[in-house]
Length: 223
Image (cartoon, rainbow, N blue to C red; front, side, top):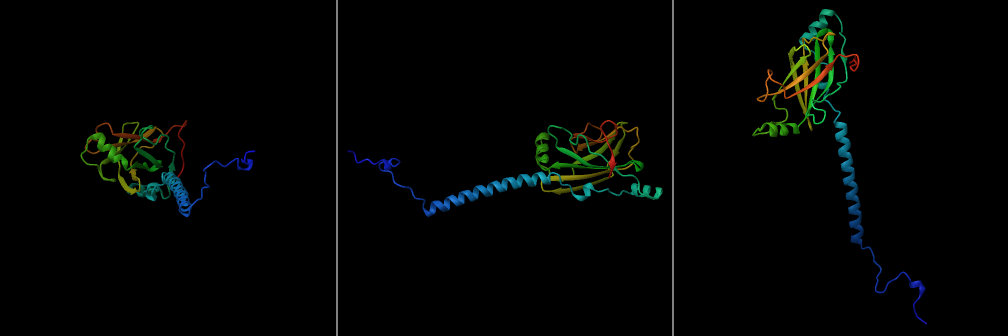
């Protein structure tokens, strides 16, 4: 009768039991810890960028007091009505927008309109490639001119421009006085000119409609 025992059924000839060495245990712990840290870093970066995408410096969101606005307030002896609305299409190009408009503030009685324009710092490199510039402008370089246009063809140069930079973005606070914000004005757009590429007499490099007065799709609310 054969000496083969059924109890040895799961063992093969020459097979040796494998033991995990102390080094193997350490290597396994290190690998698992590294994988966990990488996952936490990736998720944390995504969450940070998503939350930072909604960030604006305080000055970009606040009502800027111009001399014209202060004089109007004194003339009426009180606080004028300050309104805002959500900008319906905040980019100059819905598929590949470089500039984003936000934080619209209007004081219709005083003819005052304010908004912010934000751009990613990588836009400077893309513009240098598009226009054949030898050097990439520094983030925040004074290369933009902002002009407000309305549907009457009236142009309003920015009376106040304030720039701030923060991590990935450059922010511009734009303030316009003397704007016709009567019922006859259906829209206002910000034309963005790039110095040395377009001037205010030419078609702008980009344009964003920041104000719309239409009962169907534009709604105002107190700021």
